[in-house]
Length: 348
Image (cartoon, rainbow, N blue to C red; front, side):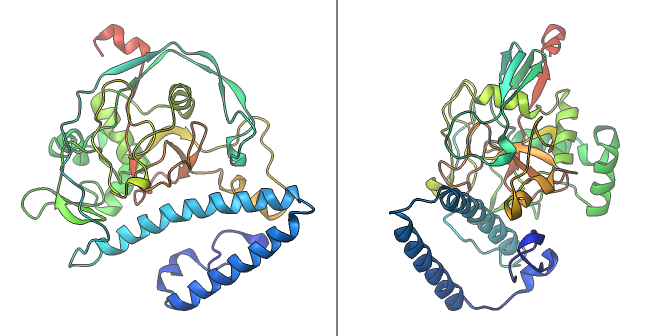
């Protein structure tokens, strides 16, 4: 299984670190293979019209949503590959200059017992279920994502040189990686950022992206805030329509917030939460190979929410759970701050 690096039930795995070394099959062969698969699926669908198979329909639906995930991953992989080229080539048009982001404000939520998880009969992944109750203390969420300009203050204040802000494992990671700024930032003179449009001046108004959980947590501590839990995030997002800056805009770079109120919960950047990726109460993995899809990864990872500027439109929802290791930063991951409600009483 040439492109399988995860699932034991479907055959022998190809090592993940070696996937980028594959030069065959060539593009024409891959496109021919795709066309043949499409042809076979159409034949199968036509044959099932007279006798619908709900199990087949469920697998096809899962496959379509899984393909959308890989559409995003292809763009993040392209960005990482192009960033290693000394010519800094672009894949898409350069992002336009952003308008000034509104000042950050805080939105209060009363907490209490809230329902978390997917509700309804439309598609969701198994890790979004079952719906269950969670108790939340009163909390506050920042009105928008943290900007490049705000994160730059952390960088220039020596945040990457002071272990007091960092988790122990995060500090070890920072030292091992010699990380001094977010992944695609450069400073040949003035600060620059590599984008899918190539190397551009760092736009202080746009959200900071490509930060690890360690960096997001360190920044939040430096500000005196914290990252939200995934339940806090979902409780807030469930009150809003799923609308935002997704891949359909074809800018492939997060935009500055343009509205007051609770903004950018969907699109622009995946938002790190402080929640470990684990099964919900009562979770049961599916039977067979499908059972490997999410459940086997529920260890040593953190949950991200909301989608990004390279997430396909209509792919995410309030209950959608993404997940990555704490060191991961090649995806479009950003930061939304949270606070305990008591901090408001102490000038926070």
